[in-house]
Length: 525
Image (cartoon, rainbow, N blue to C red):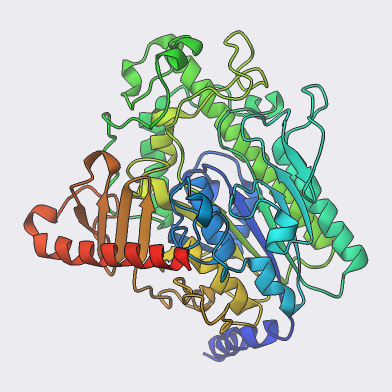
């Protein structure tokens, strides 16, 4: 009894101790990572550094992005839904390019609090193309080329173009992003050790093209020959055992095809790829080998992310800042079913995963990576918008290895960061809308302490709304139809209740329409 009382007193005192100074903040964002692609989220992929963060921090089970790269990044950086800040839809009318005048980014909000801010990696926020001048970062390495992990054509240092990297220079995007982030942190320690920092590290992996060092691929060769059907079931069982999900495993949707790929693409890939989900045992032996190698490359890209995250953590420890750095890890959307050839094209004779190839994960493996949910990147079903969220902050979070089932969205990160930095009531300006998100800081202490009025989704005709236990969702291909799901009982979206609950559909649709109209007004200010 006495020991329990002491523990409770220490836990209660921890936020007061942590608030004496402002924490550093490190956001780690991946590109096209599926919900179950980390070891700590049920994967067979080796991610010991991220697993360790989860074991000594928190995992959120019900966190969401916008379902696509640039809307998520715009929402993350501003704290508003992308429709409010002209980041979705695209293209925007010329007169509305740029953020609304009332918009402020995380660095701009943190600067008055004494922070210095650093960016390394992908940007993809067209409303603010000059990262230092438009957003308030103090240093930036911008890897803008999404088609070449080994030899980028477009990358910038502090908004100034760097020369193209050739294939024989040993460059690899994930490593370069970590290198620059570490360089900025070292400079911060040397010149600004008295100030807290905000670091935004945005990896381009595991976004297509599937490219990785051969030594990383080798660790996974042969691992995926059993196929996506068997491995998906195994991931689902691990997710349930961990407690991350309950309910059903969604049924694969064979009719769904991502909006990409054509006959020419198929010919370039030697007809070995498939553009829709098919049972593994229906593939030829050549197709199975081809598909297994693709997934091995995807796994290698994630493995390499984890290795580079480990280097970043080592840097924080060397700076003696690890204990008081709020670390947040997430993905910008679900795994991608897209298949296309861009960049330097695809040479089917070159080793798979090398710089001369251009391969995509495709719908079979994407379905597995998004286990247990439906659909993929671009859609507003759970497979498109669900992301792992790992949060670690020893001086601010007493819990270790616990799960948080609070619903959340990427718009929550701005208010969370401001709250952690000691400015929870920050207001951008009189003309700015209230932040639609909620601070997650209360959830750091107690599960179930963060409540939202709604979560809103809209991307390329795909729509969704979460209110309480209900989710309303509609696809571009069937724009006149809304489906309704009891989210608590059926997060995998397998039992459509719309036919028998039309009044609830009408109620939620009216709310979605009102929000969509309001967000359009916000963007026009």
